[in-house]
Image (spheres, rainbow, N blue to C red):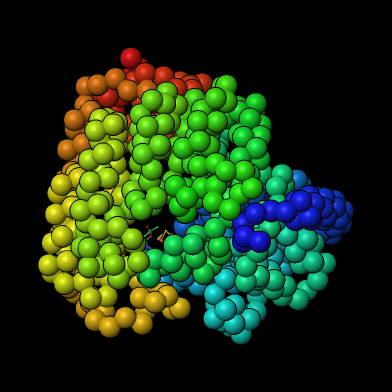
Length: 479
Ligand code: 5AD
Ligand code: SF4
């Protein structure tokens, strides 16, 4: 049996598991009432998300359960009785940030005896992290990982009814438990998981170890979720997966990512579809064709390059070359001339020479990305790259990083300037933090624009003239 096909038995188990979790939500509610009585006031929660959009979506699931139990959400962790950090471990500095914040939280907890601290997410999947917490961070109350996040209500109940540190981290899972409560951050847009995990094992990356093997959700579950979201006011969805282009592998029904998009496009009332992330090795002609003719799919592809050197790409286990990547970009641009292309690049992978780096600069100069996330290589214990020789010295990396950043910023500015004066559709998203008369929105290509407009427009898509380009964002007016 394949790793990802859910048998009827497994479907049944997943359904029963969801029911069990709803029973725990009821138990938590009763306990919550007792705790409120003891405290003499409502109890508050705060979720901090580190890392990617996948984590942001998971945090909405955590918040959904806490909200269902009765906890009230607060902006700042110091005002909360239940604080949960949903952690990331893709780079070492993400881990350091969490330890730093825990130090601060320990002091806050001393002043609030009702306070509980929970940690979950990718960092908890690393055994050495959990050991460290058990040894030196005894004030943490609950620790769980990425594979059993669906058990949050159950674990929370255990924690609410005990004074001991509750730790439950699984190595892997095949289960996808559907339909648990979710509290969305935005009423008009939402992330939607279409798959979990990653099978690519890029040699630098810890994700396959902490997020487990790739598992696709069934198309009917995805469609049903989006239909529910649309009925609830959502007009934009972001389809989430580590490698959306390999969606569908292992499902009983044969379906590709392009076919899934075609089905999602048909959902009435849905206006914008985004997705991330696309692995270049799996991006199909069908996907390009579907995007080219679509009215709803944003003309934006995030296409991580990582390195422009074929030699380094091989060591990274990326399964494409400099030439095949550039050919793919040309093919995409030919079919979708106004497409925005963005990327991720790692500087200082072990063995990267100045010549290798120049290959990266060459690709960047050829593609001229709309924007790029640039990262300094971070050694992750347990990955093959951590054991590679010729780790690049820090000062060399820093110098390359600065040169790369200057180049990607220059291209970013040029792309932004090219749209100055044009009229673009904008989804109005949030009141402007600094100026009350402005509302901030996003173009199809994700660029930010500030517009003098009424807050009533939030959640709507309207044409906006991009009056002035301010480098990486625009000032606009309703067209
Ligand atoms: N060091 C630096 N960057 C990394 N990424 C993943 N692993 C590492 C690492 N060990 C970057 C990749 C990926 C993005 C999400 O994070 O560029 O696309
Ligand atoms: Fe990591 Fe590569 Fe998977 Fe992305 S595709 S999550 S970089 S292993």
